Image (tube, rainbow, N blue to C red; front, side, top):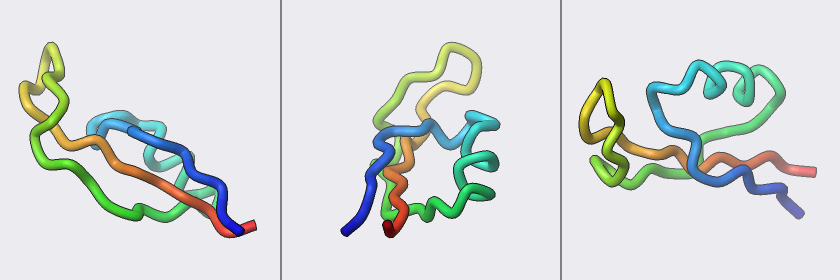
Length: 50
């Protein structure tokens, strides 16, 4: 069983927090989010095994 935390944008500092809490990156959708400062970036789909 897994828990999914969906769509954390790669430029979000919270990616480090979720990783430190045991979440792993399952995949990304390249350039699918238009960040106001960084332009097109990839959201990360993150998960953690329970």
